[in-house]
Amino acid sequence: MERIRISGKNLGALALPSFCPRCFWISMHAEGLPYQIFPGIFSSIDSFTKKVTNIHYESHSTIPKWLQSFGELNKPVKSPSHASFFIIDSDTNIHLTGAADEIIQRNDGSYFIVDYKTAKFTGNQDRLLPIYEVQLNAYAYISNKTAFNPVSGIGLVYFEPKTDLTVQTLDNVLMDDGFKLPFSAKLLPLKLQPDKIIPPLLKKVREIVDLNSPPDRTFGCDDCEKLDMLIRLVKS
Image (cartoon, rainbow, N blue to C red; front, top):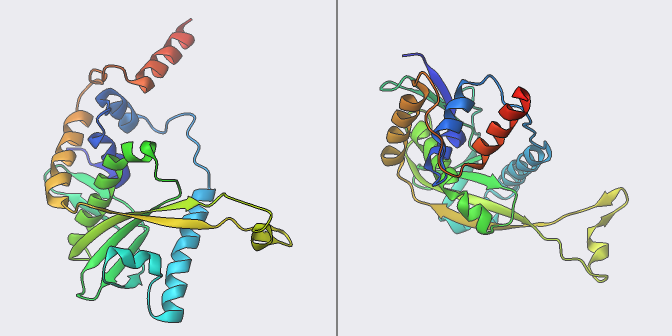
């Protein structure tokens, strides 16, 4: 079998109720998709958040209070990059990779994996939870088979921008060269079940990708509609 590489986040797409095998087949076989833009500001915010957690621990020998709602967490450890944080699944020959935003060791020596989201926790975010649940369980699956084991918990932290502003609070956010935007943290623990979730999804990836042609689309898939429209435009 030819080796397949997939990230934990992209694996999560298979758990969505709206998952389209045709779109997935195309995305896995295409060498880059058009019109893909990801603003770099979110990576900067994630990097800053990690610095807050690590510098706070260095200064106070404890993690910030807003993280402590996840339970008895002790100290952050350096999260490996996707280049070194991976496993090769022997049953499917799939290279499963990822990069956890935060890995925190608990007092008992086990690990808790955190992923940061810069967004308000809304109904739309709730619809994306199947992706995030698979993503974090994939990180736990990799961790348990590599350096950070055992994993005893996973969770999301939504950083919601606090955009309320009044005349009375204006001076608190102004700086000589700009302004400060505060964020509040909303924590969401997720169910830890990597051995139950990940292997069946890897098997499903292998089955779809190995098809010689794209499978049928999911009824009502918006992306398929847009793709078909582009094909018609090119042919016209």
